[in-house]
Length: 291
Image (tube, rainbow, N blue to C red; front, side):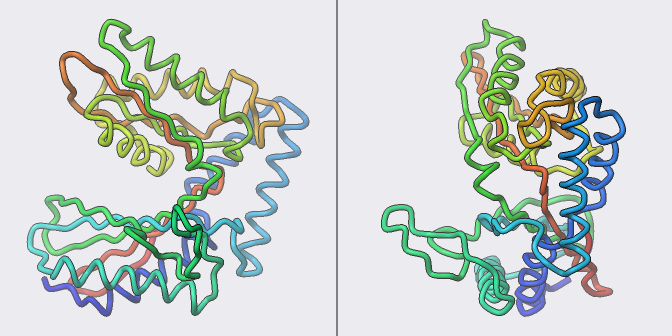
C-alpha cells in the first residue's frame, strides 16, 4: 500500500484540531470513576467543574484548554506500507502549520534562545515526529498528541543504582507526584519509564503518560508496579487541581526496557487531566479517525 502525502498532510491538520477539541472517551470514563469514589466535598466540586468544562468546550466547538502544547506525531507503519519518509515528515509539518494558521490556533512553539514565535506551531525539530513499526499488513497509523507545558514541565530522570532496588523506583515516583502537586492540573496520568538508557527511559515515560486509560504494561512486573503505584498515588491527598482529595491521578502507567548491569534509570513524565490525543488509520479502504 502506498501512502499519499497529501492525505497525510490533511490528516495531520485534522488530528491537531480534533485532539484539542474532543477528549477521548477513556478519559471521560476516568473522570466518572474518580467522581464516584471521591470522598472530599472539595474534590467532588472541583471534578464536577472540570467535567462541566469538558462538556461546554465540546458543545460549543471550543478548545478543551488554551494551551495548544508542543505537537507530537507518532507514525506506526505496517509491513506492506510504502512511503517516502522525508516527504511524509514534511506533509505532517505542513498539516500542523495549516491547523494553526487556518483554524486558527494559538502557537505555543518558540525558539529556545530568542523565544521568537513563528505562529505556526512549528520550529526546529518541531513538530516532534516518532516512527515505529508493527506487524499489521496494509495499515499506517498516525497519532497526534499536543503536550502542554503544565504537564511537560513536570518531567524528571534519575539514574538509580541497582542496589537500591524497586523501592527506589517507587519512592522516586511518589516524591515526584508530591513535588508536582497541583502544577500538572491533576487528576493526571503519571507516566513512568524504567530501564534502558537515559533518553530511552524519558521516552518510555512519555509513552506511558500518553497511553489510553485501561491499557497496561506488557511486562508482568511492570503491570504489578502500575497497580501498586496507582493505589499509593491516590492516597497522597494532592487531589484534583491540587486542592485535596482522592483524585490525584487517573492511573500510573509504566513502560520498561532492558538496561545495563550497573544502572537502573527511572523517569517520570505526567499528562494533565486534559489528556488529549487523536489518531487516523490509513488502509486501502481509506482514512478513518479515532483516538
